Length: 215
Picture 1 (spheres, rainbow, N blue to C red):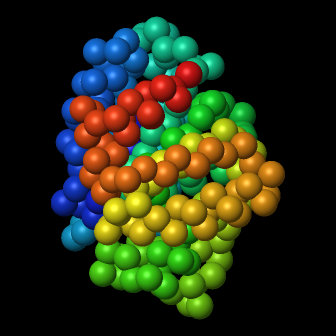
Picture 2 (cartoon, rainbow, N blue to C red):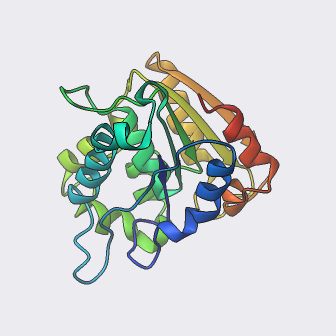
């Protein structure tokens, strides 16, 4: 399952990840390039709707598994930027009856800590729009929506981040990684000498690192 980024804004859609989906299909994987409600006029995105969408999209794999010969024991989630936030949010989702349980969550340049991202003003203050207020105004929403506040996730996670990332500074990823390790999670940190978008270039060595970690 693939989750695109774009700071949750409506003008960025799943087309961003199309080349990755096609690359995975050529390698023999079934690629589920999921869309979700985003921020914008009449788009309906933000907390909780966007989170509800990715949860429902994950669990819908069970409904189509037979038709498409999917192996639900080998589901992986790959998310980039804001999609990396959503992947890590899914990683910490409590198991429920009927839910699909991916075996690995791979977050590329993830907005992994919403409080820190808000403090840094990422995306020209988009975190406040996504969550519906500041951490002081709606702390309960940050507690529910920020992966860093839902640890331990209790799942296998891989974080890949570029040192030259100007969109999501690398310390946002490192802060989450350190907290996840301290919480006892099974989490891997992969640091590369690259920028934000290289991670989703299917021709890059960084993308091969992702493919190597798929089940």
